[in-house]
Amino acid sequence: MPDSLKRRGKHPQDEAAFHQDCVPRLLAASADLAWLKSRGYADPSSLKLVGDRYHLNSRQRTAVARSTCSDQQLQSRRERLIPHSDIKDRTVYIDGFNLLTSIEAYLGQGILLIGRDGVLRDMSSMHGNYRVLEDTKKAIDVVHRFLAPFQPGTLHWLLDQPVSNSGRLKSILLQTSASFPVEVELVPDPDKILRDLTTSDKNPCITADSGILDHCGYWLNTAREITSSLSFGDRIVIDFS
Image 1 (cartoon, helix red, strand yellow):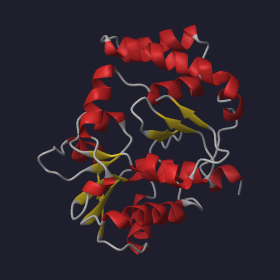
Image 2: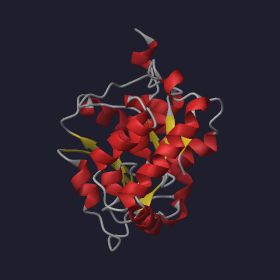
Image 3: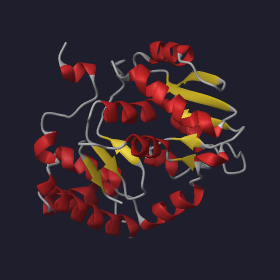
Image 4: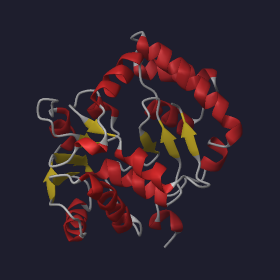
């Protein structure tokens, strides 16, 4: 089996697209896109304008889009971000595929992005398909071990039921040891559940999805803190923050 199917590593074009010589153009494009978004310009047309100006290819445009937010979004997200020390005895909701693909990308030395909001994201694209990789069980264990010292009441994983292998991943999650209760739920749309969480619930979520971060209550920047604690080593990390 090819390595690309075993680990969530780099795309064949990524070495060139995210070479250090390209970083200044990517950062400049992100700054311009943030300026446009902050003034209400539509996302698709703004991204095209910026992408064309800086001669970005499709992978680079995806990275810039995923990593950029408006001033208003940035302020709102910062106001609802809480430290992991605040999760003791609380239920923590996890955007399951979203978190695991980022940790798997870290373990597989894929491209990592630190967004303007400080959130770590990856360049993976599932399109309704998820493959259980050689790093999947390790990624789950990394998440559980990282959260253990903060003593969450319950870790509630939400998985997209329509995504392939969601049932298999649920079984793996329930079989992975943890020092706290772990629940796994297959739902049609985890995004809606996470967006509907409010600060009055006091139960935070873990996600890097911008659509969720703009509407949810409290949230945790878990993927960023996990990968920072493990060190990035020689991985390609584009920091837009």
